[in-house]
Amino acid sequence: MRRNLIKEEILFVAIMVALLAIPAYSQRRGPAATVKAFYRFSSARSNIFDRRHIELRKGWYTNELYHLFLDQLKKDEAHLRAHPTDKPYFGDGLDFEPLHELCNAGGKSYPYSRKVGRPVVEKSVAYIDVTFFYPRACKIPADVWRVKLQRVGSRWFIADWIWPEGSSLAADMKANNL
Image 1 (cartoon, one colour):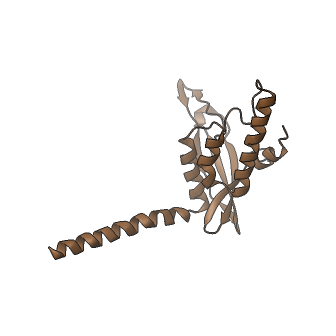
Image 2 (tube, rainbow, N blue to C red):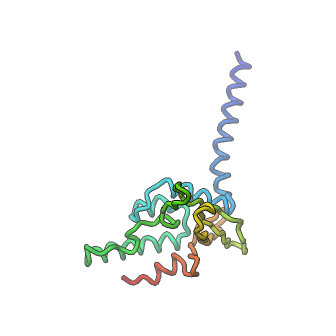
Image 3 (cartoon, helix red, strand yellow):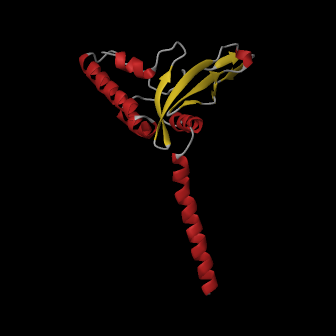
């Protein structure tokens, strides 16, 4: 009887250690794993740009990017009050990838795929290319977006997205003076 109780206590302690280790491990994801996990998380949720959208993803953003989103939301709300029929800056939503359009080739429809590249790390900043591509049958060139991450302590946070033409999400929001 006593022996079974000891086994149960050891099993309980082992399970608790394993459960406590999961969040600690997730806090130490590298930049590529952070980007992959962010896209998995974000793609499973609504892309409507509102307070809920910002708060759901807050843990992924640097403080600066988080505050840029909040500022943009205030600008959008003020703009809509003044011009209720206009579309706000993120009126089509914000899902951090190209529009979800299907490619029709050879009688079949294909969605694009996403590939997260290898990080280029410079001290506490990392850059990772995310490639959005269709199968070769579509004959559509790939679209490459660069994600900038900032390390704060032992965690990586998304600081910005850099578009193929060189502009960035943060710069676009800062320049948006609606």
